[in-house]
Image 1: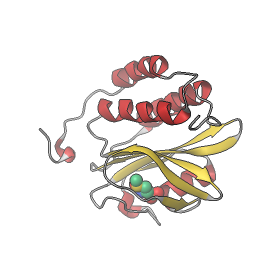
Image 2: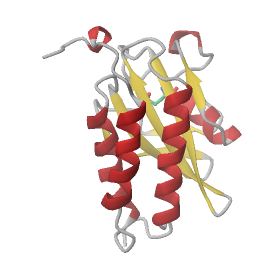
Image 3: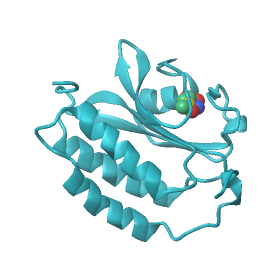
Length: 168
Ligand code: SME
């Protein structure tokens, strides 16, 4: 259908996010490993929004972020905390919304087609677990609505999934 997602018409996103909140709640399984839950969490969000060109999870370990479950093209495997959009979000433990990645100092270009990005920290029991990164080929694809709802979705995730049980 669309080969260039900059041409995708805008759709009202709040109702989509409201449905996602319900869906995520029933999709997550408290007794399943975090890896399994994260994989489905990422797929669910990816398929809800055509504007997403890449979505994935980076987990924090020894001062670096390492690639976890994702959907999209091959991406950077390792990012130093403090570097790029992901590393900045991890370091500040804050959501970072970037309207134009080409203007973000130190942006790490995994896909040269990416033009905007949002990165959200994932914190559980006061510990930085990792970040959720979403990219788009559109400029200014992500805004306060995305921030608000993605933060709510992550809250559901950390309330229900124990990241200590990443694979077992
Ligand atoms: N652009 C990110 C790197 C990760 S990729 O977009 C998947 C950054 O600047 O941290």
